[in-house]
Length: 220
Image (cartoon, rainbow, N blue to C red; front, top):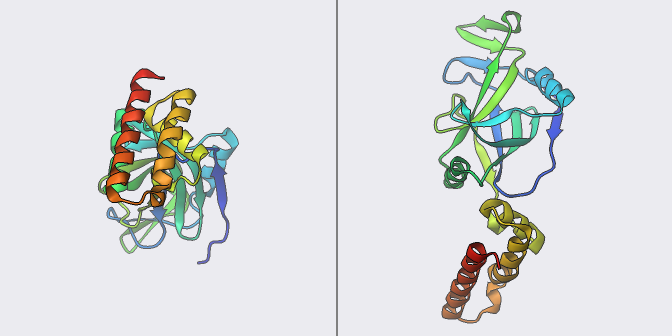
């Protein structure tokens, strides 16, 4: 069956802590023997759109452990895809970000359904409609094709303004502190080709890190 309808929910954001992912893949049954069919998320996403919010981003399906937010969700022919953002200012979010960058996490969804919204065939439950409650970062996903496709980092910043926003959010700096850190660190990170020797390059980076540390500690 070809699925062409795409429902698109999006919030304004910056790159700090962002990742893109396939939260649920259509196709084969998951590890619990469930199949969610194309179109099953449409009504639930439409309800979120009407209310002006999006499902929470949780840690291991624990409702007491939110670690960020979803910035964009859409259902495509591939499945439920989106852009999430871990909150780097909290310890769990920072830990999750490190695991995301290392490839140590996947995604899993929490949902409910009404009795008339599913059927069983050959021992497999097929869901035609689900109410999406949350999406979690997990170590072992029920759907093996629910994968993180990209995690943004400092290296993805293309200009000083993006870098400033990223370090401000990641380090919990004030705007003034972030501007000062950017003035010191961004030129070093983006103009290494201008440094002729490895030793000079190393010394420049060390100097930038020392300056950044002083900015964070003193706010000057």
